Image (cartoon, rainbow, N blue to C red; front, side, top):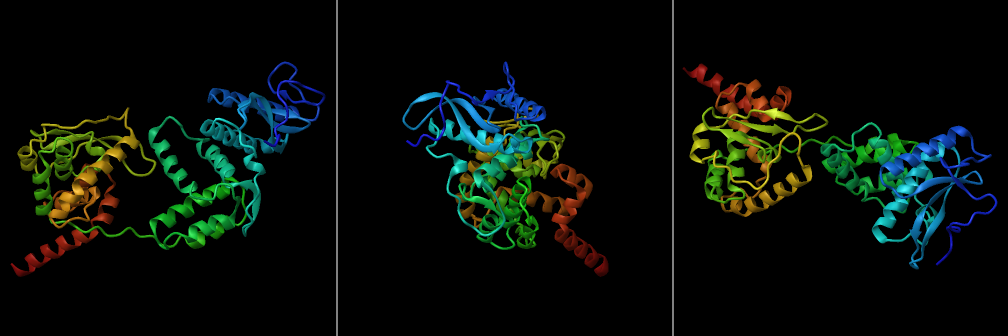
Length: 404
């Protein structure tokens, strides 16, 4: 193994001294930088990261006890290749996180440091850091004003990270590598829209120039218009699956109350009033809240005995688990798909059941303000989604008035 990391516990002239300990000074490093390094090390300790940043010969090093690929474990001083400048601390922290992540996954430090890896030559303005390291910097920037303990935020970051991890991790970060990846996605698609959004934020967090070049690839994504399924087909589907202990109650409840698939796990029907209580999980950055869905119809809710609740998972405002609800939602759809195919609606998505409730609410004459609250979105969103249905109903009403 190439010995690139220096020695362990023995200190000679010019060796680094951990910031914050006894005699933690460095004549070549200003006090503001030393104080910032001390704060950084405290944050690392709070997050149970067993590594710290130290200064030696006016350069930054990672100190910690790590094994190498030969299995030799000892305290090491690992060069970050960064000078002891306060402006380099974000990059240094990202390199610590990158190294620790590698060690946690593999059990030892790499023979060649990530930031010493050969750079892939690609067009564009380069900042001289790898994509993997740039993602760590973006992660720090993303969470600086957010609560890491909030599950919806964790799920959002997980989704962003999924797109970022598709980039070549050891390539040099530059606009070329970002745009090349964007070009591989379908134009005018939702995927391309998201890639442009996330890659631009990655570029901005790492101070790249010409980030506006990404805007040229966004396009004009427009969500596909959902096909409205014949309610009789969905009722037939519910009748087919209602006796299934795991998915029957969920399918019947989603049809009756129009809840989002994830919300249905929290649904508590009230057959006497024809309403229910559920957690509302709105899109975007809005917080969850309790809403009161209306049954369409109460007669069906009673027929399908929706107070006879059969489910293995539920949640409230305090214990929502987005990962589990998404997993169970996928399992639910996999169960429904072959049965829906038997009825000629093999394209069925869980969102289609909710959408069908919205259309039926209009034909039933339910006030738009009440319907939008039941669905858990704004009245503007309601009109935008169901505009064509409202136009159809208006035409029918006008025709009846004209021909009476």
